[in-house]
Image (cartoon, rainbow, N blue to C red; front, side, top):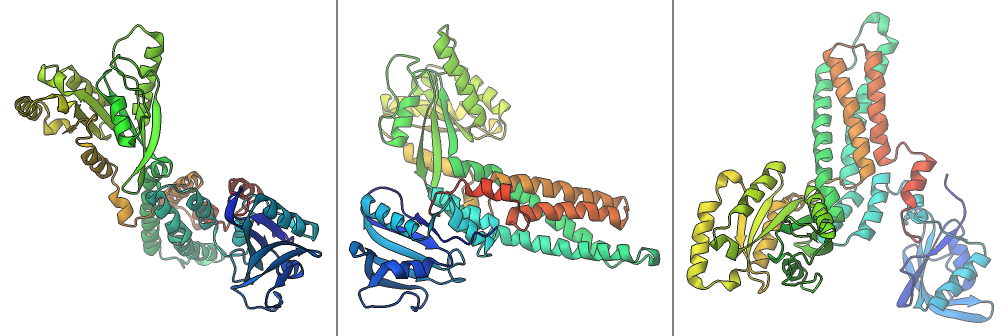
Length: 471
């Protein structure tokens, strides 16, 4: 599967910039660059040490294309495991294309999407889960997704899986060996130790599977639904959180008729705020569609922010509390935060009355948090951000626990757990070694799918097709 071609691609984003980096990898990478590169100190790139940088000119015959730096990395101590040269040239699009076309005319081939990283995987420089983490690292847009990608690139997740797979493989070998001595009725695999291993594997798999829910939303932005009746300040709150006029603010009820989404980073974690249509009885067909979408977004949200006007609370308007309890009953495990908005409209005596009413209204048994807020003046916005960080259990990241974000890994873990449970059931039922071996082999297969010890051309094609060209 390893192509012998020498490949080339732009490793930096396309477009004009101060500097562009063009990467070559393959058996002929160093000889090809040496042929078209003239060092200012007359060095021969074929004879220089690995991991060195050299100043010189890229020449097309007698014509000079650019003054460049050539970085030489000799295999196997390179990113791909092959000889690699990176040419740092000036960032003119014309210069970039002239250099790439020059090398293609002299025997290079344009790299496919992700082909450099695929070669790194095929040459044993990283396993498949680490290779996939490279794409996640490039796509990371906040501290949390960056930390997860770095952790997986370092092999924290895959090393754990490899260790468990190796231990399971050892027991599988002993059980397979027993089959060769079936007539002697001997046991090479200690059943008590084997059961302990299966229990340990089950606990690890369950923990990794459970982490996917958090990992998936961290990767795409944690969805936060902003809901409530019309004209309570939902759009004003969204604008205050984003610090820009993203949503239309109007005194006219029902202005927001569709959901508006935008993302910000709080404490290194991406939050996707969703401003929804106001919840009320209406005959307007368009507005009613917007309200239906509000409930859909509430279903998918990790946290629901329910806005209430402070004036409604003072007027003893408690219908909102019944709605809050209905939402909490429907989503008992979902954090619901009641935001008492427009407190800036109240004088100090009425604000004190409001606080007393809220203490009487909200009880611990309903498990609904509340907070005073003025989206218009920004009062309470920073406190709200801190509360959101606590409610999404951001501490799991600070504890460096392994988090799964890749749906392919999640699927393989689910299948692995199913097979482990079959083996455990077989042990309890006293099944023979040959039947246990079938389920163990399946568990080993799914473990191998994660790290790339078991792959297919189609699988690799699907994974690396999502990479950018040049990586």
